[in-house]
Length: 120
Image 1 (cartoon, rainbow, N blue to C red):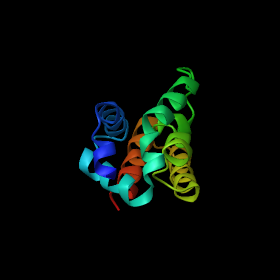
Image 2 (image 1 turned 90 degrees about the vertical axis):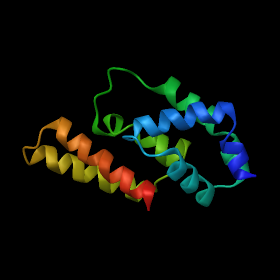
Image 3 (image 1 turned 180 degrees about the horizontal axis):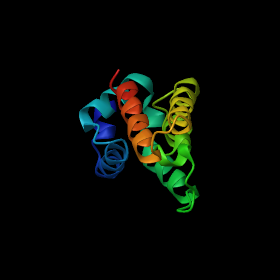
């Protein structure tokens, strides 16, 4: 039943957006993670949760949290990571920037860390 929910046309659009946002994570991997973490009620509401998050975003926000694809998106709206996991990734990304790494490179490495957590 959970897979049927995530395969609906409305969910497909949201899954595609999430996969693109997090560096090309495959849909099958994302679906597997969502199915293992959540009940059907939350899964049914994923498109609405994504839309709410999207409306709250501003294009001028250049914080690490925003550049990593929206920390609140994958910790609160569509929980794929715990707050602790996301805070660790944000801290490591900020540390890399402070150590002289370019912001773009640090963000790319942060997205790679997010991908690893999603795949685990």
